[in-house]
Amino acid sequence: MTGVLAPPPAPPSGGPGAAPGGKENRRAVPAWVWVLPPVAALGFAFLYPLVLVVVESFTAPDGSGFTLEVYAETASSEAFRRALVTTVLLAVGATAGCLLLGFFLSLVVAFVPFPGARFAGRFINVFLAFPSFLITLSLVFVYGTAGLANGLWTGATGAPEGPFDFLTTPWGVLLALITYFTPFVMRPLLAAFSQTETAQIEAAASLGARPLRIIGRVILPDALPALAAGGSLVLVLCMNEFGIILFTGAKDVVTLPMLVYTTAMLKSDYTAACAVAVVNIALSCALYGLYRLVLARTSAGRGGDRAGA
Amino acid sequence: MLVHSRGARAALHAVFFALFLPVFALPFAVVLAASFAGNWSGALPSSWTLDNYSAAVSGDSLQALNTSLVTAAVASAAALIAGTWAALAAQRLGRRARTAVDAVFMLPVAVPSVVVGLALLVAFSAPPLLLNGTRWIVMLAHAVLVTAFAYQSLTAALARLDPAYEQAAAGLGGRPGYVLWKVKLPLLLPSLGAAAGLCFALSMGELSATMMLYPPDWLPLPVRIFASTDRGALYTGAALAVLLMAATLAALVLLSRVRSRAEQR
Image (cartoon, rainbow over all chains, first blue to last red; front, side, top):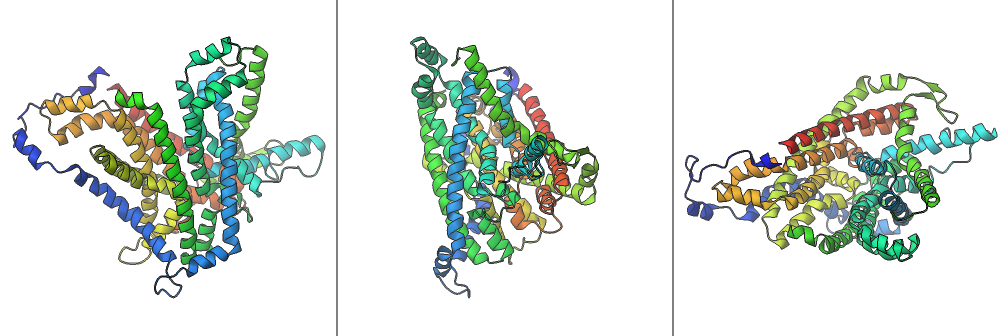
């Protein structure tokens, strides 16, 4: 690490045409100018299209003027209402599942370690890099009509069909969501646990506290910000998830992103799709704002010492 | 050590593996097994074959892999340039302005990818800029979706960077451009490698926005996998998925070697 600064710095007025220091400062471009090119690029590729979606959703079907007609139609449609309820229920359920499972698994990895526990922690990071739809695909082979679980059952009992047939129901989607998003909870939790003072746990244990009490009184309060941050991130990501639901092929599990897709691509009704999209954006952005707020609190309370370093 | 009794510890570990293995390890094992399966009616595939792979590397599917690799490379490069630039520029701003730039660059994470796809479709389906139906709209979507992650990684890396190096170089008379090129970017190289890996992996697996945008002649691998499984060719889909994972992992390993070499310097 000592050789990091390999290139010797140029002598003060070495370069050809180097201006004296004072003049250079006056010519310096203000900081905000430098931020313009990337913001402009993002504005062109993302913000401008997003604005067009909002505008389109307020346009009358005959293309004239401002109207709320599309929203009224959307709000009164049964499909939209069901999609909204499904989305929220699935996201909340999956988040609760991820928090429970993630908390337990992280707890074991961090405080009741076993040989290979660190490898398990590493493995979780790799997991995050893979696309979500692989989970649905693998669940088909595990719980599908001709999969592992049903194969085991029919092999053991001789029954013609296995009992597992839930993949195209909301429960199948829920299982896939929990499987895929639990690592997103575990990563911040493991980071938080690695900073928990083990001396506190030892002290509590030597004073006679039982493990459950230690978890409740020492570990949980410390991990609460990480749980909140991980949970709210997973909530947003679950609301936005599309690949998992597309791959299940379930006709009766329609979430908002799925509704946007079917309305735009299969019915070619862009205006209605835009209205659903605007609702989806509003929901997701509100939740994401909440996540950033929680995160800012967390790093303010926790990372204070690091910021000073 | 939270639990001291050996028996309780063993029980806890048993529960851990009973949850961890089915949830995290089984998916990969099962997809891998299915990719070699000729037929699967029992607990394990009843016959093994390499046919799925010969289908997976035949013309169209290989083309899809190539499409994904090119898309991911272009999108990651664009995202890294935009993200690094924005992170470097935002660092010099005041707190308010930096929060605003943060919010704008993290917005693509909050907005559902499907909606990003729809937005690009609405914006670029008509002149003056007709991108719909070309491969460029797919690359643009991927770039938009992964830029947030590049920006986030680089911002975190910049916050960890010791300002002393930069100050020393500037104090010795290095001009800003020189300091950036010769001091700051080399110090950031490991983080750039990590960010590139993440962007590449995410773009390789992107399905939501791609489903809205892909033209017939630019079909990325995830779309191909969906098409396979949707028409019931599950084992071919599994072989393609293994191909996708292998390509993603290879890219990640390659980039992490760049990273470790940069760290050694």
